[in-house]
Length: 235
Image (cartoon, rainbow, N blue to C red; front, side):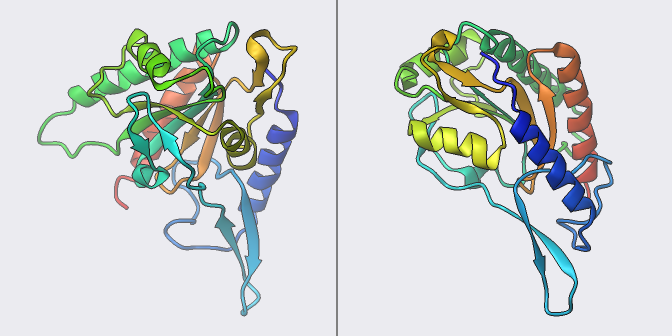
């Protein structure tokens, strides 16, 4: 069920404004050529010369495993574009549309990659990461079946459904990804969560938020993925 992430969105907008004030001109934090904003948890640090620098909070390393029971580490995502969401397999509400749209994005990304001419340098890879907020019921077998029903082959590492400790997953959603996620016994399925997809760049920064229940929003996400691939092509 959708929980309006009012606080999260306001926080993201505040972060975006702070980013625009940064004087950091390094390659990693310089003005983006794609025109996409740089969002997410950050600190504005002042150096000895009086200039300010934006320091982005790194994705915390927590114990996770994928739908095949393989241990997963966030470090493995460095240098790749990511599309991230939070869901649970027994969700009777928005997860149905979210997972259907994520599956379509995943399938089209694979199709696009297969059509890249062999003589052309392939674009930066895109990974799809879905965290379950109900790991008690979403066992690895449940997630593996869910992945298969959405077109993910066991050999594929491009779309991973991740599980870990429930409180750590909820904290990750709210404190790093700035999305609402939590148990609510009055909600259908027992959980409330945001219905957004997040676009993460190869440096681990949030570059966009999209309503995962609306395919029109997902088409904008696809456009922005292409913009990010171009932005990081020559880095």
